[in-house]
Length: 191
Image 1 (cartoon, rainbow, N blue to C red):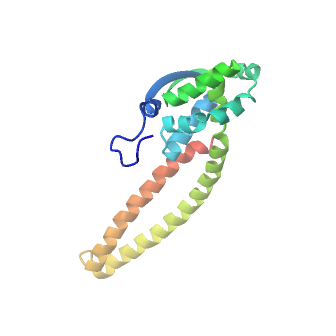
Image 2: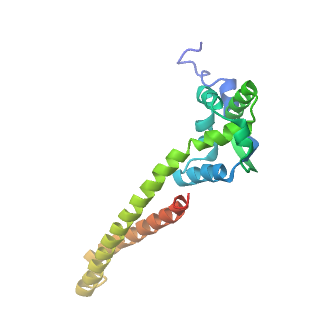
Image 3: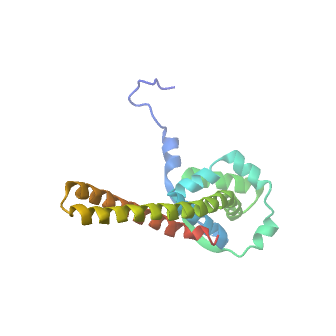
């Protein structure tokens, strides 16, 4: 075991190899493909990291494999989709797949189903965000009206108005960011 003050200590070659990215193609339902994309984009998580999180755990994957009904899985209309995964995730999929004589596609499909509760939770939060965004927009409009009044009263070159103008620019940027986020989150509404 290397000493902690050893400058050469660190991850082993096996650890580093497990972090390598590889491409893998799976046949999945459109809902599974949409789920992984939605969670990755909406939550700002790379798809590879998401796959690592939901698949890499051998014991959870093993437990999931015991519940999968392959006949039922084969009835699901599926299409091919290529993803980038870590080598460690691919190895976990392959090991469990071989152990249970089950297609890797089924393991991936049912692993992704675990994301549905996250998506439903985010869907509820999205509705709350929309309500709060309306309140924020109303407050921003009040501030804009105050700024217009200040310019009318003091003139646009007044130091007070110039400082308020900076705040208005920041508020506009914030409003645009919130609107963009809510627009991207609209995909949750139809899920």
